[in-house]
Image 1 (cartoon, protein in one colour):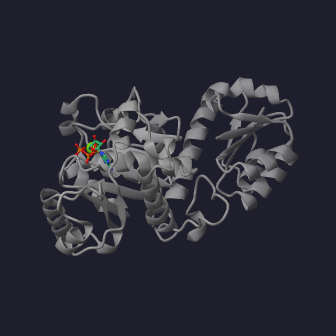
Image 2 (cartoon, rainbow, N blue to C red; image 1 turned 180 degrees about the vertical axis):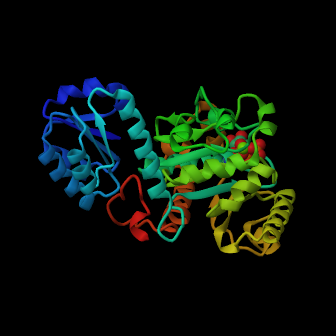
Length: 389
Ligand SMILES: Nc1ncnc2c1ncn2[C@@H]1O[C@H](COP(=O)(O)OP(=O)(O)OP(=O)(O)O)[C@@H](O)[C@H]1O
Ligand SMILES: [Mg+2]
């Protein structure tokens, strides 16, 4: 989100095209500082031409200390060397001329890219956003149910979350969340090799009830084969720079696209159900992952429809796969009913036993695992993991 500070706040209208309809206008340094302090989603400040250079420099210097993640841009009536050198000294990222709207658009794009890179790569080279892939080698076990609900819960909790539908031929994330995407992962193909955050953001569809961003599967199933697997790695790398969590829903087989996601995943959620084929397929999937060198500690097993009375019980599954079950999700008719209504059960009926299990999974196995302290006030919406490096 962009904040705009100018002595005449109405001047924001001159820059609406570059700043977007969501940008918020403020008319004093103290209000701007407070807005930045209270609003963790504010990631850019544009200082208008009506603010004196001295005041602008003063606030920019404070922001550099208090909110170094915020990109500060300065608009000036005239560009001269003194202004530029002073601005750079206090950490202003770009100075643009007041009458050059396209320069402002470009400066914001560069600044967003820089923010993404800063957020995405720690000094040690590790990424911030966590990639969590939901997988099962058997169809219909609940991957999409789990992925959509957990992603919606994370987004609703204020975490910047992207759900990627990697079931490229038959993905039903969009329909499950009642989305009507105008653009999908298909359009990312043209950006292969030079995808940036702006490009990625232009392809996502917002799930309004939760604030979740969704990269939907192609409308044309034939597009699946036309998308290079390297694009998956590229999408996830770019997404990590900006999102706290990236949840990946998958088809029921180790496609090359799935392998590309598995390769960069911080956590794999493998789903089992109480039937012999599902357990056998899970055993095979675990062996395959071992052979691929995927670390055991970054996998968990979730048992879906765990209360089904079908002759097998959860202990039988643990015995067969030699791995513990982290979360058990009961079966309920409410799950398909929610899908048919296009709503997330976990958001609509948080006290339903299925929702409680999904929330437990989101909290314990994702948020706490990745360093969130759920006992304190909500963490900042972006750059959640920044303080841990
Ligand atoms: N806990 C549950 N209780 C009852 N029904 C469930 C439960 N979990 C999932 N379902 C239902 O089972 C069906 C398959 O679920 P889902 O689409 O999530 O599976 P999937 O693994 O994504 O399938 P696919 O491999 O085809 O993508 C859906 O109709 C869903 O509503
Ligand atoms: Mg599915």
